[in-house]
Amino acid sequence: MAVSFSYHHDLALPPVDVPEREGGHLPGPQPEAREQHKDRVVPPTRRGAPVAAAQQPGRRCGVQPLATQLAMSWATALAGKPDEWAIRLSIARGFAGYLQTLDPATEVPPSDLLPRKRRRANPYLYTDAEITALMAAAQTLRFPLRRATYQTFIGLVATTGMRPGEARALDREDFDPQQRRLLVRDAKFGDTRQLPLHQSTVDALIDYTQLRDQHRPRPKTSAFFVSMAGTRLQQVNVNSTFRLLVDVAGLQPRSGSCRPRLHDFRHRLVVITLIEWYRAGVDVAARMPALSAFLGHSSPAFTYWYASASPELLAVAADRLEQNGSGTR
Image 1 (cartoon, rainbow, N blue to C red):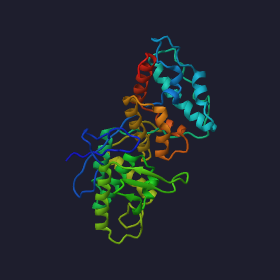
Image 2 (image 1 turned 135 degrees about the vertical axis):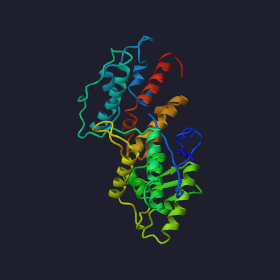
Image 3 (image 1 turned 60 degrees about the horizontal axis):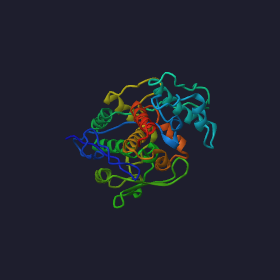
């Protein structure tokens, strides 16, 4: 039986289903079968990005090519720290690189123009087929509870963009099926936030709680996700199991700095959301603060960085830019 999961929250447009567009859901923990999942990407436009001032990827509307000084002005326009400016400039560089394929006169800012203290790994943007393979790989784990735990864990972080540590820290009382919400407590910056859930995700979590309670009726922890020992999942075990699933699924690094990580599902959620917004013609820049808050970011600058590295997103943003330059919305 082909299974897909949807993400849905107050920021999203209609749910995106995987791999078949049929209003799917996060896989539940049935003992035998279940398969599954999804993906995508785009850069900020209008008030929120350097392309706002450029207005047009080419010169068909009489607008000059994107210049390094313009990208620098955008990167440093908001009050912030040098590292945040460097993140914004890296976004501008990615977009400029795409525009340069359309207009060779476009300037790509040097990578060391605003150096950063530390470099991040390049996000691994999962394809639908890769997520399907990961979920199928979880079905090869030995015990029903372990299969259900990791399939539901991966599905939840993929559909909500939660940090893996936030998912591990969930307690049973943090899941409210009636209100269709998850409570994320004491996150990275000490904040607490609520995440609206799609009904399909709620159903999958309910399925997991029933199987979990059947196999571990007297757990040693209040944790939502439990290990075979009835304890809270530990980071080292989650990471080692995910690497095992990556190997079973046959996922390969795309470069030395771009390897499959659990954290990269956050990038994927941002990409999916922004693509849907761009295609719907909404004001992406105006909605970015809400998306940033949903992810638990301290600044929208970090959310913009999550939107990098996707040709599909760049193409959608460039199309919007061209429409704006032609006087259409």
